Length: 265
Ligand SMILES: Nc1ncnc2c1ncn2[C@@H]1O[C@H](COP(=O)(O)OP(=O)(O)O)[C@@H](O)[C@H]1O
Ligand SMILES: [Mg+2]
Image (cartoon, rainbow, N blue to C red; front, side, top):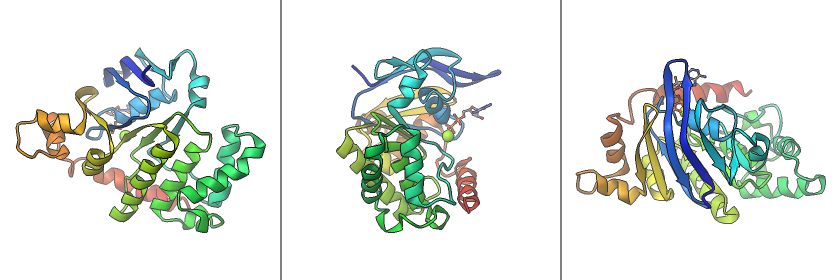
C-alpha cells in the first residue's frame, strides 16, 4: 500500500483554486520533491496532508488513515517542518528538543536518549547548550528537522528546508536529510527551489503550477520528456511552468526567512 494517496485533493481560498484536484500516490520510503514557482500550491498541499488545513474537496490518506476523518491519528505518524521557523530562540538546542519530545508523547524514559541521539545525529552535540538565537541558519534548520523526527514519524514533510541558507549550510542540511532517510526508512516529502539537489537526491518529483500537477516522474523521466539534449531539472521546470527560478518571489521569500531568523533573538 502506498503511504500517501491523494485523490482529487483540492483547496480553494474564496475564488482562488490554490490546489486543483491533485491526484498522486507516494510509496513508502520515497524521497519525493514538490517543485513549482511561488504560489503554485506546494505549501497548501503540505498543510492539507499534515491536517493543518481542511481540503475544500477530494481526499487524502496517510498510511491508510483519512486526513479528514482521522486527523489526530495522522498527526501521530508524521513530522512537519514548516516554511517559517519553528524553534524557540531563547531556549537551547537540547531544551527545544525536550519540548518536542514531550509534545509528541515520547515516553519519559526514552526522552533523554532520543534527544542526545538526535543532537549527535544532526551534528549539534557541541552546540546543544547554547541558545538557539546564537545558531546559524543551517544549524537552526537541522535542529528543526531533529525536532520533527523525535517521535520517529513514518512520513516527514519539509517545506523549503534549505531556503535562505548559504551553499555549504544547504549541502549539510541535504546530507542530513539523506542520512535520516537511510537510517529511519521514513518517507520524505519536501518542497524546494534547489533543482540540482532535487535531481540528485529525490527518487521522484512532482511539478505544480498554479494549483495544477503539470509533471510527475523520476528526474530522469522528466529530463527525457523535454526536447532538449542533456536537459537539467531546471530546464524541465522552465518547460512545464514557464517560470524562471531566479525571478519572482524566491528572493523575497528568502528575505522573509532571513528576517524571521533575526527575529529569533
Ligand atoms: N490562507 C490563505 N488565504 C488566502 N490565500 C492563500 C492562503 N494560503 C495560500 N494562499 C494562496 O494560495 C496560492 C498557493 O499558495 P502556497 O500553497 O503557499 O504556494 P507555494 O507554497 O507553492 O508558494 C497562492 O496564490 C497563495 O497566495
Ligand atoms: Mg510555500
